[in-house]
Length: 65
Image: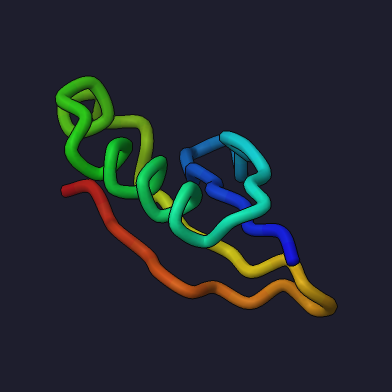
């Protein structure tokens, strides 16, 4: 099973990376949610954690406001 972390902005979706373990993907997801640059940038709208096994399924979502 692989997991992906993606960011969403005005231009579309950017994949940050693919991870073999859910724990590693959750660590990256949490780091991005707390990163001051992402919080203050204004163009990044959100970040998601996706399970890529079969049909992709969103596991977590965080919106930057």
